[in-house]
Length: 191
Image 1 (cartoon, helix red, strand yellow):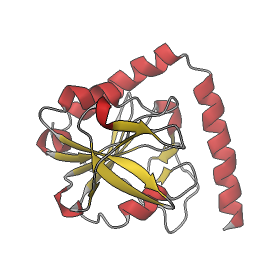
Image 2: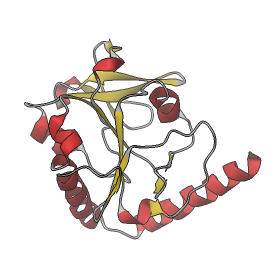
Image 3: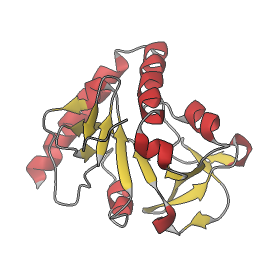
Image 4: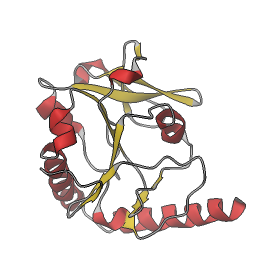
């Protein structure tokens, strides 16, 4: 267990160092390619209620994507409350406040009808070709996603965040699909 934690720590550092070698403009261009793949993907087209994140600088950019699709989809964004993550409906940028982590979080009441979530778009530090995900180490997403047994989970990441294998633990939640700039990994669906 301690060995896996150490491996994860080393991999996180490696990925963050690689991320720093890209300009903000290049990361933005790469993000656009990923989000274009996502919006043309059947599970996204069919989804009405979507869990998604408001991106940090080092993550695949989601802000413009959310605004683009807001009139057609219901988006719910994470809010950290003590040691847990809850989700609240995104209405507009005016309904956001910056958290202690520097993340824009929606105000309003917590969304608890998780059976209504059609699709969950998940960030991560690293993913692998077996659909495993490694986050930042706090376990927020793994604890939350554990309860979403039937919801389609799509990890989105830059190509440099996708590995053949990453270290995993029994409580790490697998994705159904992973989308990068150049590929979609997961069960084949005709698009």
